[in-house]
Length: 99
Image (cartoon, rainbow, N blue to C red; front, side, top):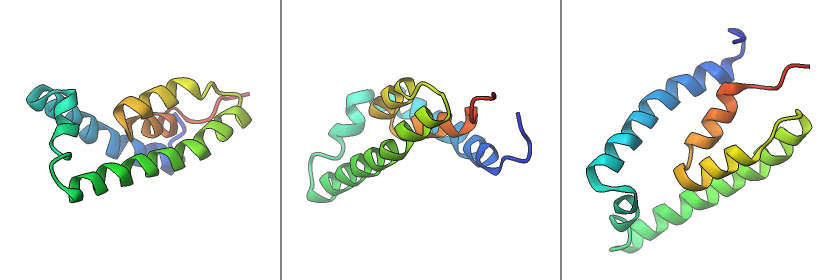
C-alpha cells in the first residue's frame, strides 16, 4: 500500500468504523429495518433520497474512473447499490491498478 496516498488513509479511517456500525445496525434491525425506520416521515424520505442521489453521483465518477484506470467497476457498483458508501470507500482503499 502506498503510504503517501491520503485517499487510502482517509478511506481506512472511515471504512472500518462505518462497516462496524453497518454490521451492528444490520444485526440490530435487519437490512430492511434500516429503510423501514425512514419511511414514516418526510424527513426520513428526504434523508434516503439524498443518500441515493449522493451514491449515484459518486458512481457517475467511479465507473469512468475505474475504466480509465483499467479496473472493473462493477463489484464496487454492486456494493454501493446494496451497502451505500462502503463501495466507494473500498474503491478508494484498493487504489489504482498498477501497470
